[in-house]
Image (cartoon, rainbow, N blue to C red; front, side, top):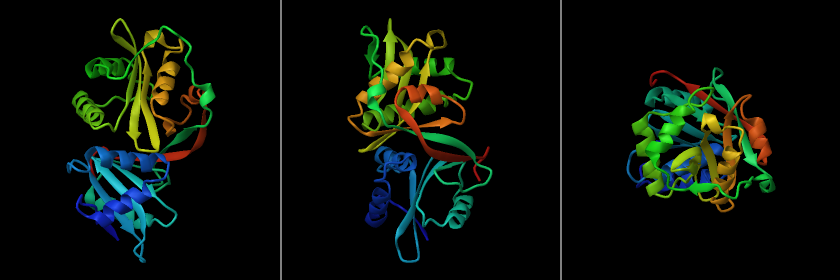
Length: 257
């Protein structure tokens, strides 16, 4: 059975927190989303229980994007039927649910000695101007780098920063961000890094590596994960001490189901 986790339903909320204590991409995404929006009713959460009443899956939805944390006892057929009923524009999981899903690679930081702090004159900004950051993101759009709508990015990022559920780092010269990275999800134990980009005129200069390294330094020993597309950026993250750990899967529909 799948139950909606209202913020006042202590049993379901406790189940979400217990399931999301694992250091995984989907667990971190759901936990981070709950800490960001769970008290405001701007995101929805559910828990799946087995016939013995044990919590075996948890789901979150923000906008139309759904994330599922699965265990070996999850009932994927029930989950698929449920998603068809409640609707979603996309579904992200670490186990295959839909045969048509696109897969990507999860990497974990395993060797912090490879982090790079080469340029002693580098300026870092941890509260960069979000409009300036968005301009940089747009300049980097393409070749597998997707950019959200401006208002979505501005509202979501500023909300997470205000509630300490996100961290940003920008490499800045003459008040202009040249490289950027932030946490796409952040929990007490784990961080998922995303939105990593470098201005096209400054690539292959080490700025992107320094930016990611400095952001990781601010994350106080958390487990660090990234999600990347197949056949993209593996060498870059290997050079920073990341190793491939597994896969994630995304099923994307044009309209909510």
